[in-house]
Every structure is written in C-alpha cells, then in structure tokens.
Length: 354
Ligand code: TRP
Ligand code: SF4
Image (cartoon, rainbow, N blue to C red; front, side):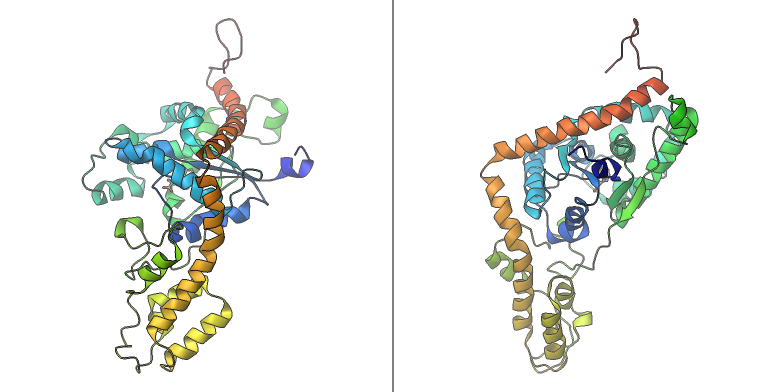
C-alpha cells in the first residue's frame, strides 16, 4: 500500500454521531456517498462518540450500543476497512488534546454565533444544553477535521457552518504559528490547512408521514428493516390528495411515494408510475408495493453484509481498533507540529513529548 498514488490521494474526513440504527435518510444523505469516496480518496470515517455526550451526558446508557449499531450499518453499507480508516473518536484521544489547544485561541463569540448553537438550545427541550461542552461542539468538530489535515469534509448542508468555523479557527491558528521546516514553509505549507466542504447532494426523501425522513419525527425506514416491515411502513403513506377515489388521476410530482420512486426506482418503473398514476391506470396500493420493491432491492445486500458482522462483534471491535491505530498515527504527525508550534514539543531534558 506504499505506492505513490495512495500517498498523493487527497484526504477525506467525516463523522457521524452514534444516534442508533441508521435510516434511509442517513444512507442517501451521507453513507452511500462515503462508500463511493473510498476508492478515490484517502478516507477517514469515525463515530463521534464524544459529540453524542454533548447532548446525552445525563443518560449515556445507549452510547455503547448505538456505536455498535452505527459501525454495523457502515460495514453493511459497504465501507470497507481495507479501503478506508474506520474508528471511534474516543479511541483516538489526541482529538481531545487538539480540541483543548484550539480552545486557547478560539474567541467565545465565534462559538456563540454558530447558528446551530442557539437553534439546538431552543429546539432540544428536556436537556440542559447550557454547558461548556455543548458550546464547544463545533470546536471539537474542528479538531476532528484539522488533526488529519483533511482536504475535504463530505457533509450535508446542515454541517456547512461547522466546517466554516473550522476554516476560521485554522486561519487564526496559522496566523499565530508557522511551520518550522523552512522548505515546507517556503512552499506555503501551513500546520492546519483549511479543509473544504464536499457538499453531499441529499435528494428529497420523505418519511412515512410525508415529512422529511428524520429520527425525531419517528417516520423512518431503517437500513435493518426486514422486507415485511418496509411494506407495512409504506402502506399507510399519504399520497397525492387529488386521488380520492381509485378512478381519480394523480401526479407523482406532488406525492411522497412518487418522491421515493425518484430516489430508489429504475427508469422503467418510474415511467410506469407516471403513466399509471396520471391516467388512474394503477392504484396507490400497487404503486406503494413497487416503491417497497425498489427499497428492498437496495437494502438486501446491506442487510446480508451486516448480518455477518452482527454475529461477530469481536471482529467489529478489531476493525475499530485497527482503524484507531492508523488514525492515531496520522493524527500524531499533525500534533507533533502543533506541539512544537505551541512550545510543548520537548520535555525538560529535550526529549520529544508524545
Ligand atoms: N456534527 C456532525 C453531525 O452531527 C458529526 C461530526 C463530528 C462530524 N465531527 C465531525 C462531521 C467532523 C464531519 C467532520 O453529523
Ligand atoms: Fe402517489 Fe403512486 Fe398513488 Fe400516484 S399512484 S398518487 S404516485 S402513490
């Protein structure tokens, strides 16, 4: 694996909080895209366990199981530990060291102005989020990204502000501290290069109640749902309200089931849906059955792969251990430069501090 092409690949980093079993929205809006990035880039994907604790600190009882579920869904979806580095944040503890050091240079106002901060504080009721850890959420995320000197961060629109903060923190860091190596500095190298967002296009994906699919709405189809559950969940879905009777024609463009077809069905099926719906040639029950067919076709290989790992949690842990080791090695490279810059590289007798 020491060929030059892998050394020249751009680095990609992204993460997900361990919120439990993933649904089709998580898959289409992130995970499927990651699977496609593994061949082209030097990829690091991690489970943001500490980020989960910023909101769930009072009841961390689900964190361990949720972490396993996310790891299983990733492996099931086709993230391949031979191609990318998969790890858990809390196993690579130097993320916390960089977070701490970045906190020294980060003005409070920058964190208070991150739009998700006030929004989440208002929207998440029943949890006290007036904590230091919650305010620092995006700074921890900045540390996650910058510690790998990542070129690209594949995320959805909701995370763009966090990557923007990451860039600002990197810029401020680089103003204070310069690369030591004269040659690298002459080439314009910086200790913490500014990463770019790789915006994940997320298709309109309705949940079973017609609203955006989201865990908090309880309207999801899980990657682990067996075929009968998928069918059962689609059956009561709302359709084009114009189709009151079977004989009324409808329009797939204003129907959540139509949206599902656009995401999961092949061209031929989509053509059948348009023809049948607009002429009242098909019923909605039949149409939902086809949508379920398309979803099941996507899920079957994921569930097959997942079930192999499910029976072997030991293997999953070993994958995370190996990933953490690789991630730590790469992160250490960056941290040597950071420690040098901040006067922490050597102990009292001149030995390198690790
Ligand atoms: N905040 C991200 C989310 O809610 C998770 C995350 C944590 C992340 N650290 C990251 C994403 C670093 C990209 C890069 O999904
Ligand atoms: Fe929606 Fe299909 Fe019914 Fe048309 S036939 S309204 S696309 S469910």
